[in-house]
Image 1: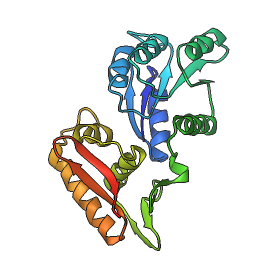
Image 2 (image 1 turned 60 degrees about the vertical axis):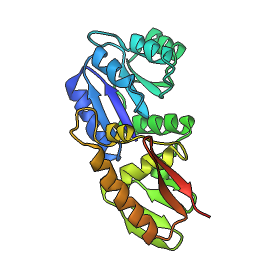
Image 3 (image 1 turned 135 degrees about the vertical axis):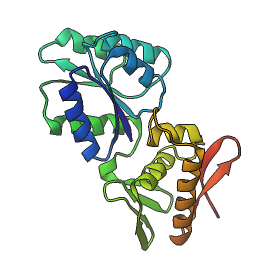
Length: 225
């Protein structure tokens, strides 16, 4: 799952990024409001950690804008201790939760997991399931009935994306943005290579799940009879 941190305190943002990466989240960081808004409007994130006091555009304005664009990504506001009006404003404009600075790592991670559960996703610590497949995103192990194998990181991230989207078609552009990020030089053939790797591993596991290509659109998980 991909998380966007919008925080102008560089050291705090870097610390948060490292904490989340250790939990196997993909992380992007923006240090000003306009960059944060541009990233958030892409709609590729599973969750936003959004500071309120930001240069260029404050967090409440970012929140109003993305909600006005019908982007329903869960948002956790980062607020100063005791700033109750900020918390109220955030919640009133569509924030899902808030964490007051300074906060404990354990509390932040618990609130992230709770926000993702409310969104309807399966959080990494519980593993992901789709038909006869079970993916552990922490160990990168993919299990099908009695068979098990270990994926490499990009394979796991790609399969996680397809599994969380269930039977919705995922385009190559969405995959590149999710797995490699906006500024990546990854191309469509990079996606095709990892799709091929995953298909071979699904065959090895004798899974009923296959990755179907919708020509000109993208990929979708389907179940064979």
